[in-house]
Amino acid sequence: MQPRELLKVATVNIIAVFIGLLITEKISEKTGFANVLKSPIRAIRFREHRPNIDEYKRPDANYMRYVDSLEQKNYRLRTDENGYILPSGALPKITSTILFLGGSTTECLFVDEDKRLSYLVAKKLSNSTTKARSLNAGVSGNNSMHSLNTLINKGLSSKPDIIVMMHNVNDLSVLLRTRGNYWSENKFMVDESRSLIYEIKPQMVDFARLNFPVTYKGIAISRSILTLAKDKIFARFFAPNKDVIAPEYASNVYLTAQNKIKIRSEFRRSLERFVYFVKSSGSTPVLMTQMNRFTDSPPKFLLIHMEEGLSEYGFTYAEFRDIYNEFNTIIRTVANEQGILLIDLAKKIPQDKEFIYDGVHLNNKGSILASDIVAKQLKPLLIASATKSQPVDSINQD
View 1 (cartoon, one colour):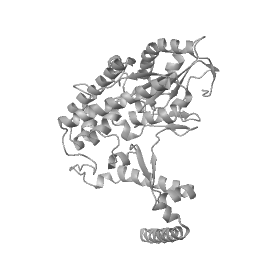
View 2 (cartoon, one colour):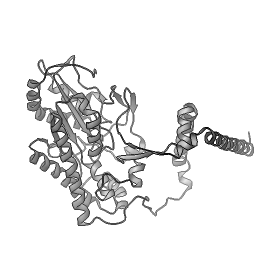
View 3 (tube, helix red, strand yellow):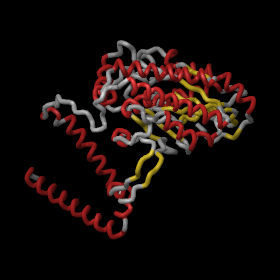
View 4 (tube, helix red, strand yellow):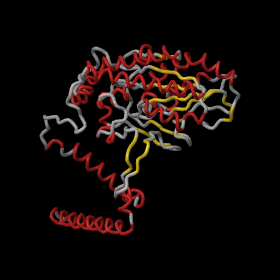
């Protein structure tokens, strides 16, 4: 078929689809579906992994541009009926449960599942008398407020003896962009699905996704192929745009001293809320600082990656590094003031690629080292909690 004929066929098909969509919209208006679209519903955003999944995640080429010690391969991701990442280390008779809350650094997505931090901790703490299981509730992008929501609405139902939380960079990312407001409804929060409350606004795409899943999936795949073709095949025909335009939600106002005070204060309050809820529930709270490679002289790939994003929001890498380190200091301070255990991974994990593959994420070797540190420090707490608890039947089998 000649190019002209192909173009003609494509045009006819596009027009037919467009007419079909118009007809569908008119039908939806008559049936009342359109009225549903005009009635948004406010909801709490619950960020968790879907229950009972078994799939593989592979870092793509773009992700690999900003790492230096990560193997590009498939990493298995399984979850139980409650959305916790498996394996859990559960044994036939459990004496203690440890709940891990956090973002991607707790999730350990690109770590072999038998080497993930939370699983190894439970495994290393289990012996002939202590049967420990871990519940990994880490989700990429979660900040401490998301984890607090997870704790209240899901985590406490498992009656964990110990609840460990590690947050820093995700909270900092949000608070820097919003200048100290977890509840902001700006475009960044909505686009990145990080707002705490959001409006459900069903559109025709939702109707198609639910009623015509095969067609919807096919369109999604086609779009991915076209995007790849544009980036890989046709990129050389277009001159690069040297003028970087900040997103609509970017702030062009540099951080003020007042901004910094508010950002630090909000993070501190969030940690204190976590400690309060855990203590009031009868569990033992534990805070962890976040390991990182944000040194005075970071690897070139990391510095470039950081500066690409940070410049759009009115602050430099040095300023980010300083506030990040302050956040770890706040974690230490809150733990000390609240009289709870602090696990200082920021001080105990070396800041090099042998253990961390980018700015904050552990590789296999780093996860193993972190599990040794965490297990050693949790052991006294686990022994204390085991003496007060009776074994319960396992609900999370590996």
